[in-house]
Image 1 (tube, rainbow, N blue to C red):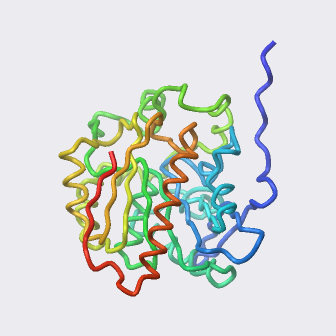
Image 2 (cartoon, rainbow, N blue to C red; image 1 turned 180 degrees about the vertical axis):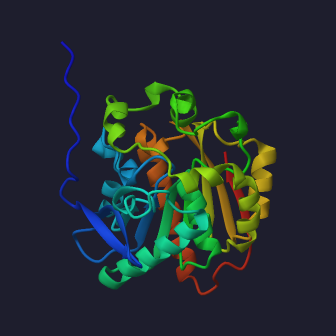
Length: 304
């Protein structure tokens, strides 16, 4: 007889639900805070299209949670439901454009800063469409330590014009890759996180290559990109990566590979390895921010 699947649980002790006021728009999310003192810094996690904040909390295996890991290492971790998801969905039934999301999230972070200690600053970990928002925040001048982005490039590996909705049964392989990359019951439990991409958001998806070219010259903080072994949405060959890193004005740009992972890396067995690498990059950003020399040179490094 097969074991029954686990049922979704409320966030465990140390992680709680939160709602922020973004100039009148309620943004929901999950918050984890260290229990042994003030945070060293704050990690803001931004999910991809058609997901929710719980993407970063590994419903099928708590040992893979970014929130749990980050708080154990002394960081506050705030995983937000992006505008158009969670508590903001009734107020924003069509969602928001990327530019509008940047303004809304900046307002939400200002509200968070008024009520919670953030430590040495804010660092963004972002997945897929959340990575677009992270780059937009940086380009718009948000005060951030750095960005760590997984599941986003700037050149499509598929022709989006030949797809209908980007979140339908026939695109499942692009989002997930081989099913063995994920813990048992991931897909049942992730059903509570998955939903339709809001209209205004999906309408802009196909415009991303050109939007990236507009944002990249205004991104002037450290950035790290991670491409999963089975990433199928985005090109990550040498030519594409050279162009990607070359367009950014960031003082440090790193590109990393994540073996044994699909596009939805933070839900898979490789999640802990990815999150540890992301937080290691945060450590590098903290050292750079504390250095009196700042970032005098531009580093275009690739770890492959």
